[in-house]
Image 1 (cartoon, one colour):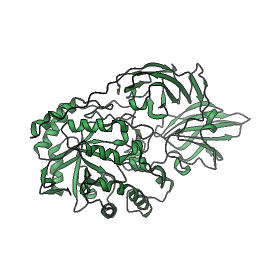
Image 2 (cartoon, rainbow, N blue to C red):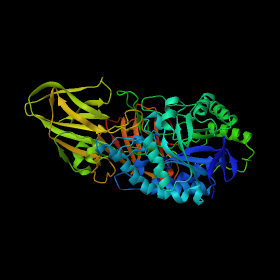
Image 3 (cartoon, helix red, strand yellow):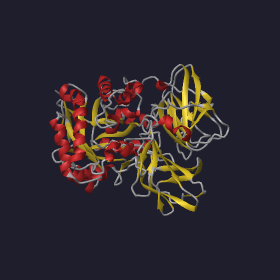
Image 4 (cartoon, rainbow, N blue to C red):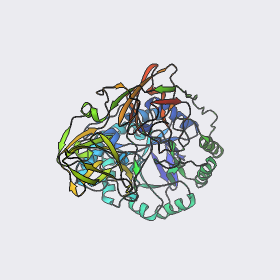
Length: 585
């Protein structure tokens, strides 16, 4: 039985001193066919440990319904890590942040207004307990105490950045221990007084997260933990992007310099991220530190990390590997990188078929009648889009249509004609119209652009959360179509019109001979979602910075392949291009 412990400031594993050099890889952001490749590259960099979060919403999409297969096969990911000779750190907190939708919390928690998140709330903890009763027994055989690779687990994630409920943290810790999690348990927080005071659990190792300022961060940790090992649980060697921002990058020399400071301090470190991967589907999160400043995260989670989004070693990889070799007594020459998988440009693909959304709502969902336009969660919907329709009598003079409140972005139609766009927090956008004597049909198509994953506004229901007014008058009697867009098989396509106006689905096919990774350029398109062979690649938006979507080879097949775009606005050229080079802005 091997256990990670510590004696003074030194980690001890299997009675031998150890310095943990770890890298974060999120199995849920990488197709399973590439897990071994990414883990072998982590080992070839000289790291000895892989760290991963466990997103609750990925594993329990509906209450009591669990998935642990495909990209959700956590056990297989951990087993592969062990097979290639890596230790594993698991962070299964109910909340993970991670720039992931709702910080990993399931959206269905928001259907109950009485549930209070991340505190000692009986309803919240009852759901956590049910989930842990399923999750933790799967991890138990993989613990180092049972001969597995898991050497440590996190109790909660950066809790000091959110709250100060010590009873909640103790409840989570006790629940993990009761379910047999007998490896080292730890917390991680920012290196500040309030964060360390509120986020730590007495008797358990505290770690800190930062991207620079090593000396000050560890000095602050020492004030609260004078003798235990120093560890940076998240060394932010890159950063993530929001739509409409510039792409974040950081020089490799700077990353190596800060890492060297940690080595010289005798500290252990986890690179966040070693390999970022992709926010496939609708799983990107969002930030909102001030109520009217909603910032959704892009599809790519490249993070400017040691491995690129498509798994290629970067300058940071080589700089870190060189440092580890210099300071380590290990020979790294025998740690050979897997052969590069290579990319390919499949070229231009015409999207020759079209299906307008508003005319085919009934083919995508069953209508729901409500007095008020209720949010997604109240209707059992998690991600995607939702369409609210009502009829208003006339005549009426021009008045503003006020949505209280839209989360996160709405297209407004009157008698099927687009009137404008409303965006959360954007007071510069408004829609107004007059109503003819015969009345008018109003449709409001709302996109969930990602629930907030960090900060004080974590509770983030989607759709229309209050009501809709035309002028001063609230509108009632709504027909609602939930559009998670998980199944597009009901759509009826016809030849694409030359206008290229959305919201509409566009379909095309392309031939693949040699199957390799590729990247999809969408230069002539505005905003929407892409499906390749039924797999949701994620969102695109001409606001950037991201200009291409990553298409891993395992999503393709030799012969004919299908591509569908759901375009919200318009295109100037009903075609896309598969290229061999990513463009993240």
